[in-house]
Image 1 (cartoon, rainbow, N blue to C red):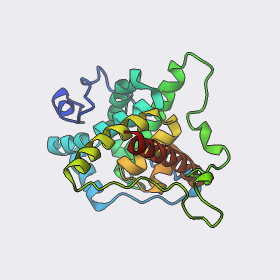
Image 2: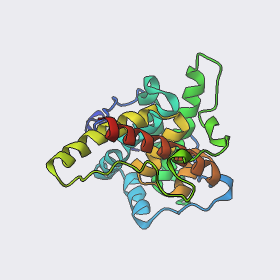
Image 3: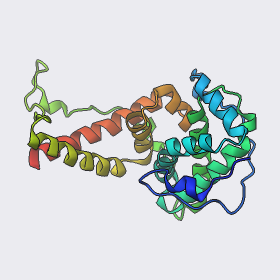
Length: 246
């Protein structure tokens, strides 16, 4: 069975990497049900081939998987469990993944399966580390709807009274602005409520489809839509404030 080596994790991404775990975590990992009965894409032929290579002890396959997933796993672990224990959560997850690969049946994509294990472990860590009254990290998802844009910005016919600020990214100034906007968005994503941040990261940063996000986080499609809408609305508003005020 493959182990999470320090050398492999050292090149996993810009978010940093932890040393190999001191001991293997024992986990019974099986196929995952889709949230609220929603259908989720099964593992691709590439996923199944990668799993076979991993089970055969192929170090290149191992490094490929770590390179693809380690940094996104750190982001999600920080969102759910907090930055203090994110590294430990990810290391436990890697150990559980490689212990459980023999039971992977391909009912979901390999990435979905790995992220779901991470989510469960991060929730356990988060609950254990709480020093205040525990609250659900997804609690904002069941509140009433809110508009993506302030209705006061439209007139009675639905036309803009205060339209968004335009900008052209192809000019030198625009390209510099694009870089600055990236930093602004990164900062604003970190400021989102945890549930919103998790959905935005998975949908808009990692490119996961909605059904995969629902399975990873264990939420309904309706809840996912609300969290995504709210997170994107806040990012849109922050971006417009920056473009308006500098």
